[in-house]
Image (tube, rainbow, N blue to C red; front, side, top):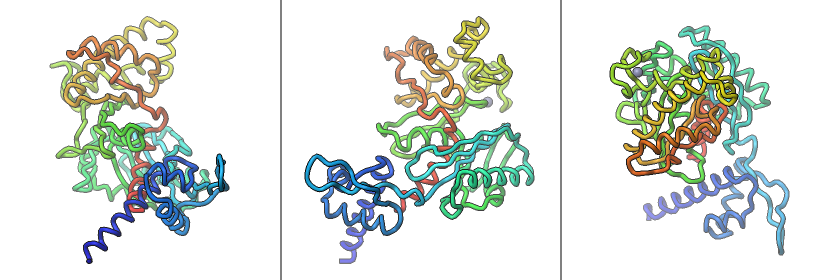
Length: 375
Ligand SMILES: [Zn+2]
């Protein structure tokens, strides 16, 4: 008897969660819509949405057009049900993103603020974050938490920022960072954050590899609604796979890592660190830009093809370069196709969907997802 009861409770929780997710994802919906799409009886759906309204998670907002009979009440996620902030820390900048339960990027800001491993640094980041929250018109008590995207290995088991060459951090307890903020903090690696933004609400739900091409190169595997972490939280760290034996010295100290050939800096160093300018020059037929792009894409195609050989899934190009390259992706697809043993056409290499603030948004979305999971 007890067991049956537990099962009924689980079924109800599961239904409630599916319905809430459906409303979060589809914006304005009605009970009959939900009933039809999720194949649940209308009385069950009506009962559950009533509960969600009582909890303040969903609200009625007018009526939907109908082709006949009674007009259905329009249901939307309540704006005040919860919001999350994403903070992306990089060597020279911080980025802030705000989202709510719909997962939309509501506000985004990127500012020059070089990293320093000092209390003053985190205090100032906190001040800027609080100002961002205030200017967004958020009520502080509606903030579910902060997702912090960080360019290094996050050991979730040990609760440590285990390693960040780029910031010069090793074995730093996450609590040493979170204590500066007034909200619950959830950390993830920057490439993981980008992959999370790309994958968590995608239509296809297919597994993919996210190749983050920013001032450092990283990657992440996303599938089945979650990130793969690996045994040591280093899954997808392709920036340090050897692409040219004995090649360029990487910031990690080894020679020939992919990072040395495919970081955004490799292109942007031609245009004073401005990547958008590089692509403008490329479009205007600048020969130096074209030569750099040829070199860059050859290494990138090699890497993308190798990763595809291991994982046999789409390779999403993200980070600064993935966001800026536009139609130039075709050169990479051609080169990948040229390398591919199975005569694939290279279209498994794709653009990222989120071209602005992907890491900050992904970090915030993880907080949203943790909340939605327990509804
Ligand atoms: Zn390296």
